[in-house]
Image (cartoon, rainbow, N blue to C red):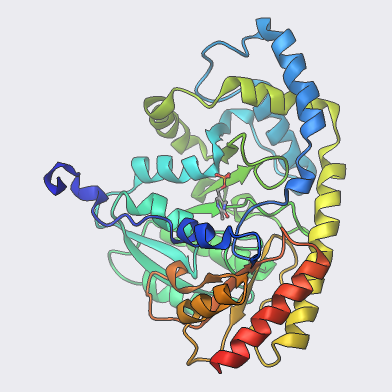
Length: 392
Ligand code: PMP
């Protein structure tokens, strides 16, 4: 039936991680593979109260079709939070509520990317962005992500080309998959280049609130507001199932993206937006996030200590927040092959290769510390250490 498929879909791959998660579902497996937030922090009782309240007051439109832009009080809440956190003066008119930040990637691809356009992406990069944007057939150009952010020399080389990319995608805090963040200097340097070369950045920030060490840094959107679309999400700080995210856009982009959203699904689920908003009115989000941060921070330390103990000589990143850390295995180890052995030893991780647009780097792996307690992390890393010694 091949002839029926649109050409644009020919190269879109299924998510490799979802395939891996199927294998890692076995309850005997200690899995560091998933990117799932820890369900212990889902505020189900508070959300039950909020749901009932919204249903009882449904005369305020919770069950009716609603505005494409999103529930106005929720957009105001998000705008106020940007001011509180980063001192950013933001109008709710520039915020569009999306069906998770994943939808924002699709909408931006739809509105901004032509087939064959150069599009710069950090490498390794978020697989979901590669997947969502590849529908629009860009030519991805990888720029290495270093310990302090984007590799500026590589970025400059690409931006010096006459037909250079007009778009750049990056996760500035606790990146998926590496856990790395852009330093303040790197953010400033990237902002300068966006302005100088007239490039639009998609700054994806679902993990920024989950900082357990160090100081919050300003988003690049604060430094170059006309050149950045900032994506946010409630998935990692409240619940992912609500599929509630947002984009903060410069004025010039709002109308087209709102039309794309309208064409795609009219609006994000209005009932769920009101339930979340009611939850945010009645509960202190900062206190809730503090609980998540404390536990993720402890689990990260447990994973680092276990790696030092059971996987000596293996390099890994030291994230200051978020859910992931990144292993660099000895050059000759192929993480895909290591995964097959690891599954037999009942431990799982995500091999790094699919996160690269130049897929010749085989010796990296992503581990999530979000979902397992400290004792389980120790046991899982002990198993991983055994697997690595076997392969060595
Ligand atoms: N961007 C990044 C970097 C992510 O890690 C994720 C979730 N895995 C998303 C976007 C999508 O999040 P949401 O649930 O808001 O669609």
